Every structure is written in structure tokens, then in C-alpha cells.
Length: 190
Image 1: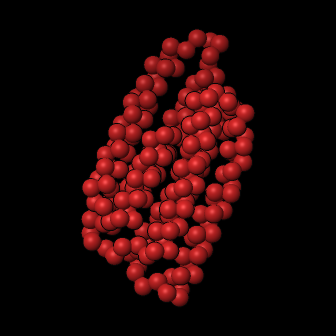
Image 2 (image 1 turned 90 degrees about the vertical axis):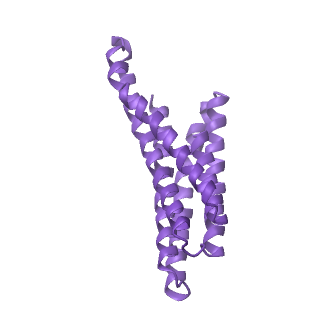
Image 3 (image 1 turned 30 degrees about the vertical axis):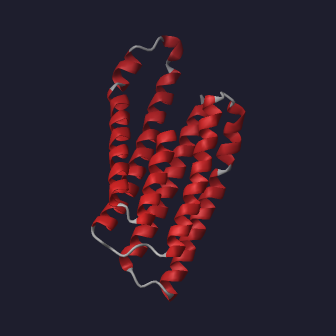
């Protein structure tokens, strides 16, 4: 969760600045995260094989966690690759309103990830329900930004590449939120 926050923030900041090196760094961070998730996935057989009878329920939990981590990693991968491709192909910089909306979304996600991180580092799991309850508010905010962009596209937007990138980033951010909350829900159910 901590690295997801870091990668997402770096990607949005680098996209806003048209910083190709920063976007390359994000792609490398995603690759490293993805490799670690793959290693967990590769060890699932041995994890399940070595469980004692009283812990068999842990296998469902482990499988769900890996699936959620994989979804998070894939969302980050798409966000970083699409952003890198956009800047690398010298497309127009996103409009100020688009960058402002993405930065606000990034700050909301950073807050969410911070709450999750402190919940686990402080082992205060009472907060999990409160964090899960914030999911719909975050998704509603992203949906509202999508609606705003639809209105802008109809009246003032003149760059199809920017519009496509912006919509893609918001849709993938929704998937990232859902996967992150699913991770918490899996933990809560355990």
C-alpha cells in the first residue's frame, strides 16, 4: 500500500510536469512491485501444501490477497505506462483543470493509503470499517470528475489524446480504489 501510494503520486506529479524520467521511475517501481506479487503467486502451491488442517481457511485469504495485489499492480502499470506513452510521444500537456483534478484525486488516495498504512502499523484494526466506508465517497468523486470532463469535452476540449488519457487514468484509478478496498475487506473477513 505504501509503495502503491508512492508510485501513484510520482506518476501523477511526473505527468503534470511532463517529466519523462519520473515516469520511467514509476514504470520501474511498478515492475518491481509486479515481480514481488508474481513471486507470491508462484509460492501459493507451497503455502497451501504446508498449511496444517486448522489453518486451511488461510488459503482463501492468501488467494484473495494475491488477487487484490495483482489488480492493484495492474492498475498502477496501466496508469504509469499510459502516462509515460503520452509524454514520450510529445502529446500536449494535460489542461490545468485535468491536472488539478488528478492532483486532488491523488491527494485523496494518498490520505486513504496513509490511513491503511497506519491502521496496520499501529495494529488498530477498528479503523478498517471506517476506511471501507470511504470507498463510495472516493468513487463518487472520481465519477464526478468523469462527468465534468464529458461536459468539458462537449464545450471546450480540443485534444482527443488528452481526453482519452484523462478518462483512462480516472477509470483505472477507480479500479485501483476498488482493489485496495477489496484487500481490506478480505482482511476484515479473516
